[in-house]
Length: 270
Image 1 (cartoon, one colour):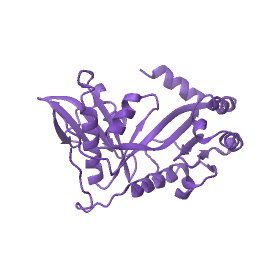
Image 2 (image 1 turned 135 degrees about the vertical axis):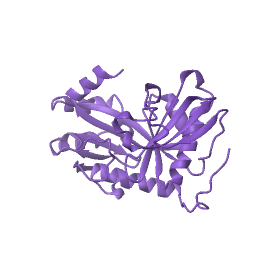
Image 3 (image 1 turned 45 degrees about the vertical axis):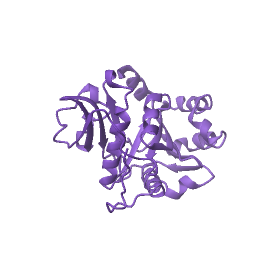
């Protein structure tokens, strides 16, 4: 295991700087200020489509709740202000993102043809813990030209076929000439690149995922960007990989979609 001194490379990165960059991006996404995430009172703002927002977001939101731990910032359609404000001020922060309290919000949304759709936890690297972890297999860093023919089902978390132009780098593990695992990063916004990971089933539980994730995170920081990682709470395997790779929980999100979208998503989800 080796630590990388980014200061020596001319890249001054601290946990505080990384968190501020993430909050600044969330502020763009939600149409609020960075300082809003550090307040003790909850904040409700109008959602608008803003330049610089994460490219995979569909804006404006019907409703998106975000918490970095101190409070909840809700970015909403004006017609939902009363419903959402009442909800987030009724329950503790952490319970607003999970059942059974979440059912209260969902019942109110259903009357408007909407529903709770996505909930996720987001992770940022802890610079005191991030290091290049060992791997029993060769790891190679791939450029877009080198992975252009690898948009295959087995690498669907690492590479995004619908947004190929955003995929910047990949770290691939090889068993001989066979790729057995891959971590990829997409330039979802100007300052932050998101990491996704896939490992072939027969090679899992051998440290490949964390070796690839940590290696790619270091490469991303070397490019002057902040790597971030997203996982659903029940995805224990993914959360464990984030922690082992030197990432720590930073913020949570909950997004509302139309009931039509939710039905379509459920009927087409493999």
